Image 1 (cartoon, rainbow, N blue to C red):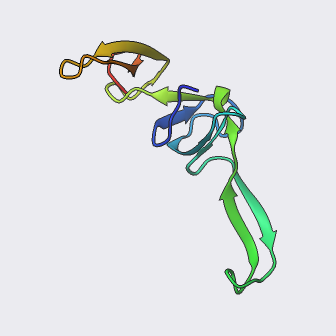
Image 2 (spheres, rainbow, N blue to C red):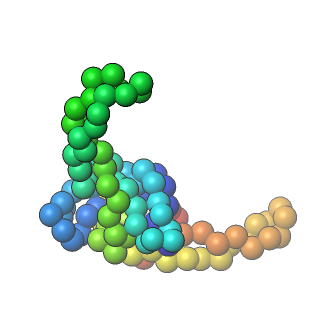
Length: 107
């Protein structure tokens, strides 16, 4: 999965289309992620030790990774993600970095 935690993404499909938010959690095995303030679900809870009052709790639910696109930090537009191999000069080890396809900026 090319999208990581703390990336800023825009929703491109579904009922939250056009909203932007930060990725809070990624589930690579399920190809899903949780975006801040998107796909809010309500859950009715009983009173317990942690929540003395109980009631209705709002929580973000996971959405499919194919419904989001990462936002380019340079142009603030949606972009596809590519990969580039960079050789570290000090240790001469290869490192793979994510780049924006629109601007070529590292993510």
